[in-house]
Image (cartoon, rainbow, N blue to C red; front, side, top):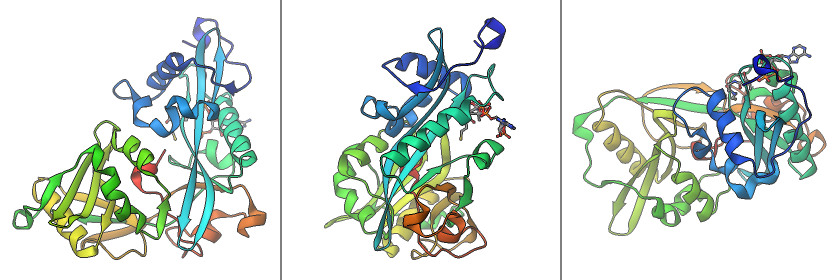
Length: 306
Ligand SMILES: CC(C)(COP(=O)(O)OP(=O)(O)OC[C@H]1O[C@@H](n2cnc3c(N)ncnc32)[C@H](O)[C@@H]1OP(=O)(O)O)[C@@H](O)C(=O)NCCC(=O)NCCS
């Protein structure tokens, strides 16, 4: 569907008005892979976020889409209001005409009106985003963990969605991340192909970790919490059952959960919306990047990525 069937690919961006099925069809046309990508981003696509979903529509077909969700960043002793933007998509027949730039711009404008000081999104640093002022920033550590059958640990269990309330204190103990309540935690744990593991003793959960998220992050632990010794035992226990290395992502500066080959990379594409409040307009100046140290610690755990 697009220019070749008579569409002009024009039109202004507007908020979605209940046309979720047309939105889902666009997302599945735009993103390669199995159908149902909308279910992998419930923070953006659930009906309670519909007021923050921007589309360009023509004759009943959705041609472009972007959405955002508020995220309160915990940056050590500071809280920063942020907007996570995602599911940026344009019908393959309408690309290169500025449609994505239009819907992302509406997300940014609305987020700024609602008080967001910074916007983040995950994706390649393509011209679409750099033209809109996004740069790669933040510091994320990647550790490779090779399977060791001797590290199998009987305390490791497969977790369940309703573990969210028990695990939230382990997440909350981190000095960095997006603030999450039990409902938000439960919602993201329901994302298809999200695998939760816990390490328990008689007192309750000592550590947890999450591998995979929809079609993304397979073989990658993108979220973990607990005391360092328990996290390390859990990650080694999970890796012990694998035949390929397990990759572990985490913020720089937390106790290393595991030893292994390590690298530093940027966390996300960021744009400062309120330089007057944050004291800089270049996100790298505040949050660092793979080369530059951070003045303000910044991290988004995998389940909060959009
Ligand atoms: C990525 C995607 C959303 C872009 O949609 P689009 O409507 O073609 O985007 P735009 O037309 O706004 O921008 C496309 C390009 O034209 C360029 N462009 C737009 N207007 C321009 C202008 N006036 N002058 C010069 N260049 C311009 C943009 O900079 C951009 O460059 P890039 O492709 O190198 O990033 C689309 O290709 C898509 O749906 N891809 C699959 C899903 C996906 O990967 N989404 C991104 C997830 S983060």
